[in-house]
Image (cartoon, rainbow, N blue to C red; front, side, top):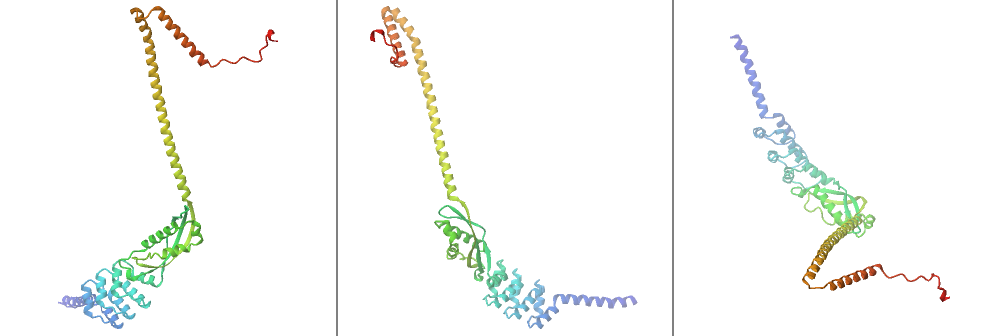
Length: 338
């Protein structure tokens, strides 16, 4: 009986402590008191409902207090709905406060949409107040005279809050600026004109409206550096001449091969003709023998034919030897001519 009289009060105290802990977990009295002290009306049952909806009350109440102190008209339902949608409530409230201080019109719905789109709405507001400088990589462009110029530019942009949702990013701005630089340099007759007036590039590119459809507004484009590169025109002409030279060499080689083939063909034809001549000459004695045997030619006819052939061979030998040398004028005179 004595043990139960001691355990009973202890169990009752433990039960009360557990009950208080569960009550304080579902009813954040400290947060509710802080909201009342800051002049923000948040019902105790609203906080309990946040617990049941698995929404940390501190993530809603503390930004609400901050917004209320800044003079913004934001309610609990808006902040809780944005949190349940996966947004960053604290960052949205900070962006609204910054925009309100800078007198930039930014409603809560627009700020929440920008945050849910994956963009940093606070950074966008800060960029609207303090423009950002984006440096382009080195852009290589070639003037009409064939000289390459390497241009680097600095683009000053300001965030366009109205186009942050669905607008293109920094990569698009840099690509458009690079395209404008290449077009401007490429339309110049001489690279010296670009070196003498580099501001012509920035003015021409800026007038093209490159910020259309982007989340930024281009304020200025400043040429940071211009360097002279290679002589692309000369290299292209050299490559063209080398290509034409190779084509000419290929055609000459083709003609030489055809000439060699024709020469080989003529040699083969000549050898074939010579073989036929030799074959025909080999048939002559046989034909003469047959003619003599059959009595178609006589012996005297055969000798006359040999004489004619010898005479013809002699004449051919004399014609191949060339004309005879004229008599020398230095020979001694004959005694009868003195």
